[in-house]
Length: 192
Image (cartoon, rainbow, N blue to C red; front, side):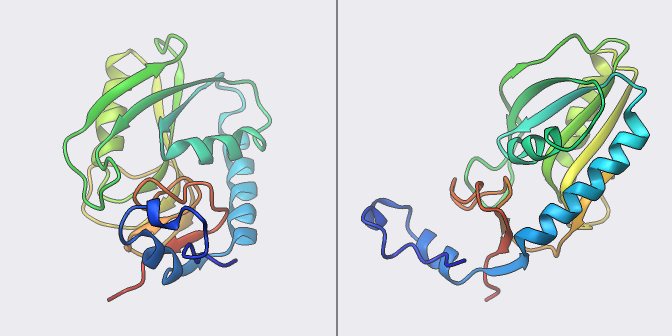
C-alpha cells in the first residue's frame, strides 16, 4: 500500500510534515497480521468474559477503530459506550488528561472493559481504570490493540492483540497529526 500523499489534489492543505511522515513510514504490522491478532484476541476475550455481562467502553478517538473490530468478532452479550479523553491532541508527546465527553450505561456492579489503541506509559488507562472503579464497577479490564512494552508503568493490559516497538505508530486507530487512523496496517515513523 502506497502512503505517498503528494499526488493528492489537496496535498498542500495537509499539515506540514504529514506527507513525508506517511511516505517514509515503516510498516511494522501488515493488515493481514492485524486481522489475525484481532481474531485471536476476540476468542480470548469471549472465553474469559462471556459470562460477565460487560460494558465495553471505547476510549476515543484511538480506541474507536479497535472497538469496531472487536464488536464484529466477540460473541457474547455486552453493552457499549465511550469515554472521550485525550492526552496527545494530535501531538507526538502526551500532556494532561482532558475529558471531552462520555456516554455509557450505568457501571455500578458491572464488569467494564476499557478498549484503547495503544499502551505505552499507561497514564491514560490507569486514570480511566481508577475512574471506572470510582463509578463502582465490579471489575475493570484493559484491552489494547498494541502494547509497546514500556516499563515501568502503573498498569498492564489484560488483553493485548499485538506487541510493537516503542516508536511513534499510526494506523488502526492511532494517528499522525490527526490522520491515518483508518489504515488497516500499523506504521511507524521512519527512525532518524
